[in-house]
Structures are given as structure tokens and as C-alpha cells.
Image 1: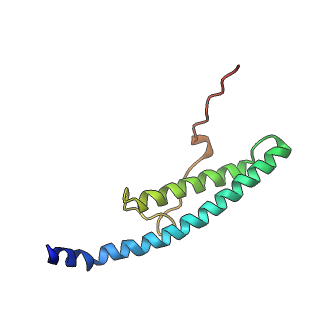
Image 2: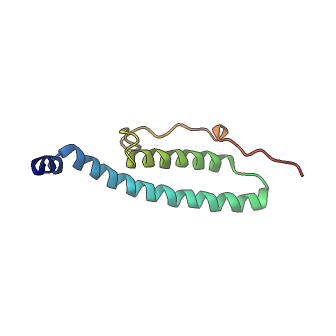
Image 3: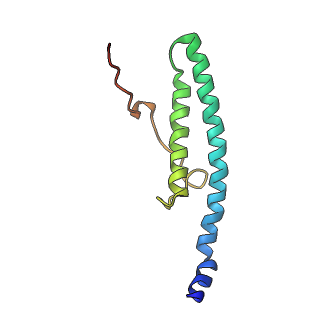
Length: 104
């Protein structure tokens, strides 16, 4: 049993993944800060224009997809590396399911 644990601790692949995980934890933090900025800007713009900004919708959707990719990698649900080691997620705000409005 002890030799199995030693072999696991010496596994280069696991340590490499750990370093990638640290990189993506940092990327996740940066992406979340940008998402919060988008949220605030979108709210302020909607106060004045009464409609969301299309470019900010695209950015918010793209960043949300990116954070999802990072979390999938960090939780071992995928081995695919998110950006900058993989492709940036392709998403469209029109793909988002909008809640149905109920008339009262």
C-alpha cells in the first residue's frame, strides 16, 4: 500500500494537472471580476436606455461559458483545457433560455 501511495505522489501527470488547475483558478478569478463589471455596466445602461446592450450581452454570455468550462476542468468533469490552452467558448446570447413572463 505504501509503494502505491508513493507512486501516486510521484505521478508527473497529476502534478502537471495541479499546476494547470492553479492557472485556471487565477483565470476564473479574473473572469469573474470582468463579469461583475459587465453586470454593473449592463444595469447602469439599462437605467438610461431601458434595454440591454447587445455587446455586453455577448461578452457576458461568452464569459459565463468560459467560467463554466473552467469549473468543468477544475472538478475533473473534463480533461479539455479551457482558454488560453484550449479554444475560447463559442456561444450566442440567443441560446440562453429566457424565463417566461406571466401576465397578472
